[in-house]
Image (tube, rainbow, N blue to C red):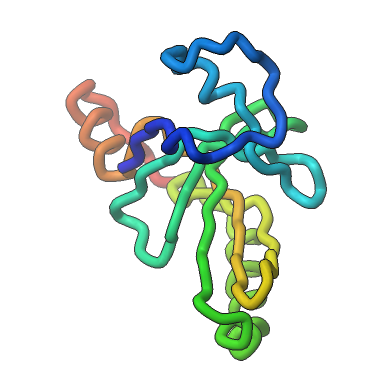
Length: 153
């Protein structure tokens, strides 16, 4: 289940496509880019995505895939110390490489991942598909009420 809400105003965008000066305009939150991926494909927005059912993710933000023109989720996992990440780096890379190869219609797609070393702390960022209808359980409940069946292929 995902819901979106603007992040607090202390976050500073790196670029803004509109500068109207009206802080009450919610659409500005969709336009403000606060970070760009190393490959420049994904742009992190100020809108935080709440994912209560996903353990381990410290923060998740709405992002834009500039190549495909679709919204995605920019997920962040913070490590308290760089050495705690370095000890698990090979395992983490293997897991995320396998997740990016996984293709299934009922599983959220993982697009790409990278690590970001900030001082003595490490951050793992991964881009995943954005499910606008919430959880798979919620989606299936909606489709059942419409008397539709989902065929297994």
